[in-house]
Image 1 (cartoon, rainbow, N blue to C red):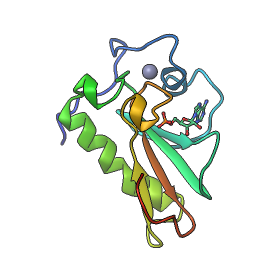
Image 2: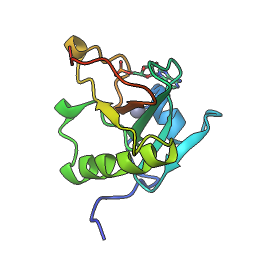
Image 3: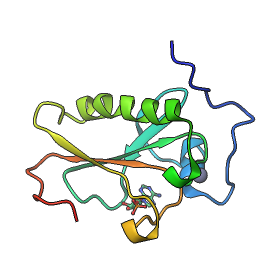
Length: 125
Ligand code: AMP
Ligand code: ZN
């Protein structure tokens, strides 16, 4: 059993953060996956046939926020289940995590992109 802290009523949230609102169920966003620590939902502007975001329920800006490594492990642990539910676990998928302005991070709540459903472009930048 992981010691990762579950989201509780005391979990830090940013009331102006769109992803905190999605994680709290305040917006009518269908979830691909949910557990005590993360939710996953489809990107509003998909870059591939499958483009799903995995976010912690806890408000964490990005890796510079030094999130709990166990929480990071939990997020990565959810990737395969999301890929399986989207039917791309066998065909292959890419994960992307934009961290800060130079990386193109536009939503400042930590998230991992899961992309697949077609052959993706070669190259990373
Ligand atoms: P990034 O550029 O890594 O910060 O990615 C942010 C992602 O969030 C972009 O791919 C957006 O299309 C996506 N996004 C922004 N707002 C929403 C929303 N309300 N629901 C789903 N995806 C969103
Ligand atoms: Zn947030």
